[in-house]
Image (tube, rainbow, N blue to C red; front, side, top):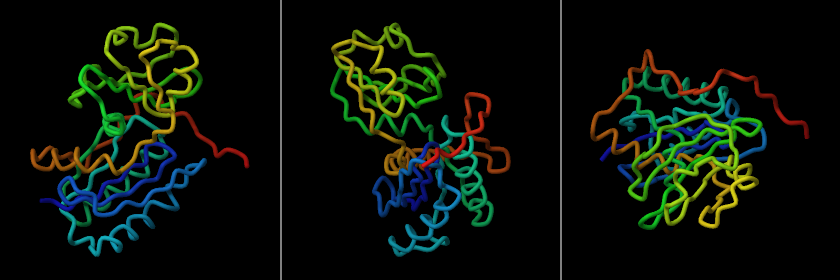
Length: 225
């Protein structure tokens, strides 16, 4: 087995988990309306280690959600992960944010999951996964209209998952489309993906790894109360 610290900061959900193999030992997360990762991330890491009765020296690897998502959130998560990997001399694992989201919906045969993150206006970040968890269409930034995802309409059920599902729901009126608007990326789903990569030794170069932004940086400001 492998003890892995998983960090998810791609959206408003600041999420930290510790896993042993595929098993979650502890998870700490908070999905606030504003991005609070700079204040919460290291606190959650410390609390998660304490809750699992572990120390930094027990970790075998760090896994981080690599995007797409919030520029600021991704920078904070990746910077923390790289700093820990350098100081502890352990490998870095990157997990596609949308792949972790797809695991939050249990699919039956003939169904697909389309994780969709809100990317401002009518645009979303999206990818498509089949009922085996395999990616069948790569990650894209795309504008939602009444023809979006039309090529997948013949599947038994199409599950749109995440913050972008709300805007999709407004224009996609197909009966076999299901909308899971409350799903946010979480470190809970990272455990299985991280362990698979750990066993295959699919590690990142800590010195050169960068988040997957997909789009140019747009400054995000906190919402007024």
